[in-house]
Every structure is written in structure tokens, then in C-alpha cells.
Length: 390
Image (cartoon, rainbow, N blue to C red; front, side, top):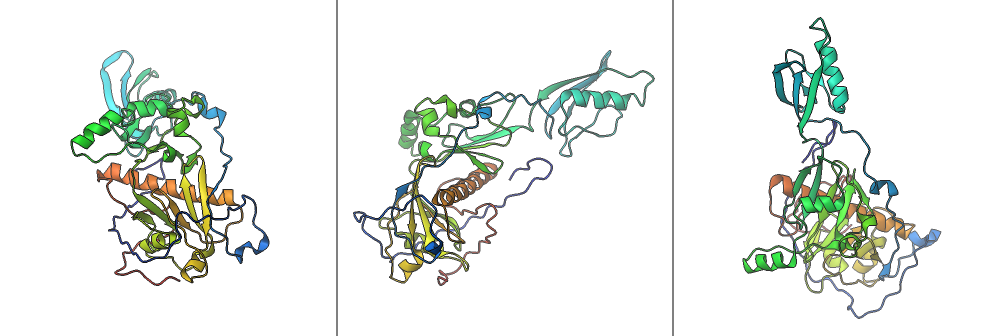
């Protein structure tokens, strides 16, 4: 997808058709459930199936004050950056060069000079020292940065011009959204609807920023609706900003299932139906603590379903709603706040992979796609029919 630093890792995204399987019994929406307590479970919790129920969980996420300060790091060069170089006093030596994929620049008769990670001052000194080997007097080199390509930020989703943007100067979240044309407005949305273009407004409750694979606690609803500037952090190179659609009629089934992905929601779909649409669980899944996460990423709600008991007819299934995250764990959870953090981080990582691949490959984002959580180790192979549940 994109190489980050000198040790980039390629991300391969697969596209697979959808499979929905009906006939799973579910509880009525009116049924009341017992809420779970947000505290450590007793030692016997792993053997005691939990009672299903939605509860709000307060996550201890705080904006680091340093993120609100203008970055003081000096600019460093990287592949793609364009430089204008000349020997002072010799106008004929003026040359435009680009930092190559190997991090090297070439000037005059010099061999490649590795400037990856060097400041402009350091690059200037390198050139002068190398040129001094070929002339009697150490020359003075002038170096001017003409274009930045190595420092980029991803701004994808429901913005006017989603894409990957160069960071020529320190950039906040609002500045990045402005560079991408801002969010899709209601007027723009109505114009597109009239033109028969299927696009949605941004879901601020599910919007997020990822940095080095970790979710940052930026609340887009507070920032863009409430004007809370404490959420307007400065971005760093390779940060990923994503604003999903509001009308996504999908349920995200992740974790220890055969095909982690987004499945199309249908009226009456339950947890069992959602898991079946992902072709069931894999061997080693802990089916007593299947999580259903609902609501915003900043203030989520969670229910724990004894899926093993459901398929045996010993526990109550619950209905799911569009936008819910259904997560099948590999082991029992102990702290519910840690568990919900795991579910949310898996969801945003998978969303970022899919959105990033669509941006790079220029593929349409319509319909439910495959979700491959980072580090899951899951190999996706489309089966002919749903396998038996282990």
C-alpha cells in the first residue's frame, strides 16, 4: 500500500463476495437485559456465561497536551523530496534533483549521498565535504527545498477530496480536513443525491485518527460540532484521518471468525446471524464472551453474549443494529474497559486498511468488504458453504 520509513510493510487487501445466512433466532428489541459491571471479573468468570446487555463504558482517554503544540522537530529529507542545489559562485552548477527511493541524491560528479533523515543543514554539509575531495578549496553549497513528498498525511472518507497530502508545514486536524476540501456538506450531499451519486455524510461518532497503528483519542463530534479546540491536535507524518459514512448499513464481524469483514445488515439480524455471515468461528475462539460494541468510539456501549450458549439453545441471543461491531475473542476477558479498547482498535485498524487500499488502488468503496485486522494472522479463503461451528 505505502512504504513507511526504510522498513515498509506491504498490506494486501482481498475482495470477497458477501454471504448471508438467515434463520437464526434472536431476542425481541423490547426485551430488557441485565447490565454488566465495569470491573474485574471474578476468577470463575471464564466458566460462568455472562448475561447479555448493553452498558456504557467510560474509556480513560486523554489528549496529550504536547499534541496541541506546534511540532518543533526540524524537517528531515526523505524519498521524493525535490531539491535545488548549486555551488555558490557558479550559476552553471544549479541543478534540480530528487531524493531517490534509496534516500540518496546525486549532484555533479559525486556518488550518491545518503540524505534520508538528514536536515537541510546536514545535507548541505555532506555535499560540501564530498566536493572538497575534488577541489582545492572547500566549496560553499546552496540547497533549497522545492517540493515535499516524503511527509504525508492520509485524509480519507467522507470529505470533498479524499487523498494523501504532503505536509509542507505543521498541520492540525482541521487544517488537514480543510486541505481535503472539508466534510461533505448537506447541500453537496443533496446535489449528489439528485445526480444519482451514492455518497453519504460523515459519521463523526465513528471518525478517527491513527498514528503508528494506534488510535488517538480525538473526538470529532466535539471538534467539529462543539468547536472544542482541545481536540484539534497537530498531525505527524503518516497519520491516518478517516471519516466514515453515516448511512453504512453494515455490521462489522471481527476476531476469531473464518472471514473477518463487514456484512450487510438485514432486518432481524442477531449476533448469531452476524457470526454466521462471517462463516462461523475458528478453532480456538472463546465463544462465551462475544462482544457487541455500539455507539461512538469516544463513548461506546458494549454487550457480552454467550454465543456458545446461544447455538446450544441455553442462552439468549440479541439483535444487532447497523454499525455494530461484533467481536469473537480468542480468550476470556477480565477487564471490560480493556476488552472494549481491543475491539475498537481492531475495528479502526481494519477500517484504515480497507480505506487506504481503496484510495491507492482507486477502487470504489461501495458494499461490504473484507476486514483483515492487523496482526490477526488470519488467512481468508472463501469457502463454498459455511463450515461447521467448532
